[in-house]
Length: 515
Image 1 (tube, rainbow, N blue to C red):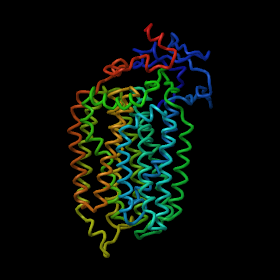
Image 2 (image 1 turned 135 degrees about the vertical axis):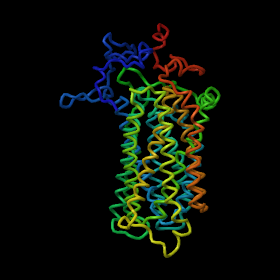
Image 3 (image 1 turned 90 degrees about the vertical axis):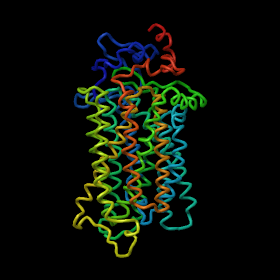
Image 4 (image 1 turned 60 degrees about the vertical axis):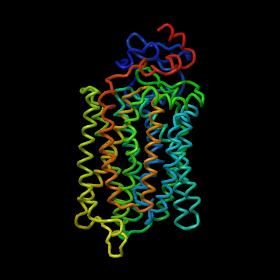
C-alpha cells in the first residue's frame, strides 16, 4: 500500500489516457479540476484532504484509498474477523455444532440472495452506511450464541440472528469488495488486498487469543466461557460504529488525482438491470462462478470436521490462532507477487492459476491422508481422545491446518485480483462482487446444511477437493483470454449506458466535452 505524498508524485501511466477528465478540484473550492504541468495534483479544501506531517513525513489525506482501506480493514477486524475467530473454534465455541450449522444455513442462504443485489445497496446508500449497518448483525449473532448456552428455548432467536447476519454480512462484504477492487490503481490491487487481508485476519488472530487465554488449562472438549462471548460482542459492535467514520466513494481521490468510477444517483431499477447487463454483456463471468461457489465451501469441513471434532478445547483455540496467522502470511506473499510489475499482468494471471492448482493438489492431498484416520462416528465414541498440543503427532497436523489457512487466503486473494483485473469501474466491480458473495454464500449454506444432517467427513472432504480443482479448470478460459495488461476507462464503459460524464461529479461535463 503506497503512503507517498501525492503532491510529489507524478501521474501514473494508467491514468494518462484520462488525466484531463480525472484531475482533482483546485484549492479554490470550485468544481474546476486540473493537473499541473509537472504532474502535481491540487487537492480541494476541507479536513478530508489535509495532510499531517510527522518527522518530515506527510501522511495521506483522510479521503485517500490507503486511509480508507485501512479503516475498512479495521471494521472487518472487529466484525467478520471476530466472527471468524468464534467460528474457527468449531460449532461457534460449543461442543455440538448442530445449532451453529443451522444458524449458518440460514445465514448463508440469506447472504446468497442479498449478496446478488449488494451492489444496489452500495450505489444507493454509499459504502459508509452500508458497512455500518452490515456490522450490527455480527454482534447480535454472538449475543444469540451466548443466550443459547444458558437456555435451550431460544432457537427461534438464534435463527433470526442467523438471517439478520446474512443480510448484514452481504452488505458489509459487498461494500468491502467494491472498495478493494475499485479504489486502488491497477498496479496496486494485489498489495491493497494483502494489507486488508492481513489487518482483517489479525482480528481473527487476536480474537482467537481470547478463547485461548480463557481456556488455556481446559484439556477436555467443552463449550467456551461466557467471557469469551462477551469479549466478541463488545468488539463487534465497536466495529459497526467505526464504519460510520468512513468517507463515501465520491470523496475519494487517488494519489494520481483520479477518482473512483461510480455511476451517480442510480435508480433501483437501473442497478437491478445492471446485474443482468453484467451477464448479458460479459457472459464469461459465469466461468468464475464455480470458484465463487467453492470459496467458502471448505470452511465447514476445516472448522467443524477437523478443528471442532478432532481436538480438545485449548488446542482448538491454538489451531484457530495459527490458522488465521497463516492467512496473514499468505496475504502478504500473495499480494506482493500479484503486483510484481516486472512480470506482465497477463502472465501473472496464468501463473497464479497454475500455482493455485498445484497448491490444491498438494495441500488437500495431505489432508486426505489425515482425514482417513477418523470418522464422524469415531469422534463421538466415549473412548475417543481429543488431541492435545502436547500429544505425539500434533505438530504434523498443526502444519496441515496452517496450510489450510494459507490456501484460503491465496484463493480469496486470487479471486479478488482476477475480478479487479477485469475492470476498474466501481459499478462493474459492485456487480462482480455481488455475484461473488452471493454465489459464495449459496455454497456455504448448502455445505452447512450437509454438515447439520451429518454427512460423513470423508464425503465432505472429497466434495472440497473436487470442487476446488475443477473450478480452476473451468475458470481457465477467463484467466487466459479475458485478462489484459491494462483496462482503459473507455473500455470499461463500452456496452453500458454510462458515459465519461456519468462517472464524474456534477459540473464536469463541459470538461468531458472538451476532451
